[in-house]
Image 1 (cartoon, helix red, strand yellow):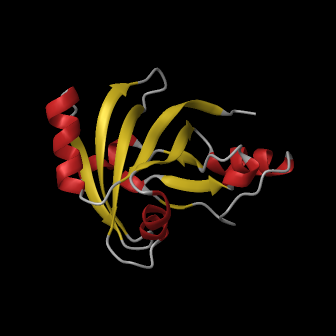
Image 2 (cartoon, rainbow, N blue to C red):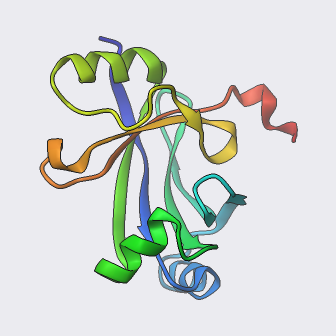
Length: 148
């Protein structure tokens, strides 16, 4: 198993992205590294970079605000309120690691990895199989493709 090399990000669901970003900036000094809207997931997000890591990736806080009522994050917020929504582990090979983890009896939510933040490839593991934690696996986009 190549397996997981770092915490890629912690996903935090919020009602007001701009206010939440301002809290993290004013309280901790974390700056926004990247923002985007993921239409498929129904969220507007901000990635706050925390640090670089030994594998060349980085660790982030991902703040998520739903852009439509029927999105999974909107439903989650309605039930739980603001807070930690998921944790994401970085891997060089999301396909292989997801298959290996599936072989261990953990449900993988996507048949094929989908597009995540900053051109990454992602999948999720079922929280009921991970002691209540929605867990994401992330393979970052190659660095040279940053010029979008």
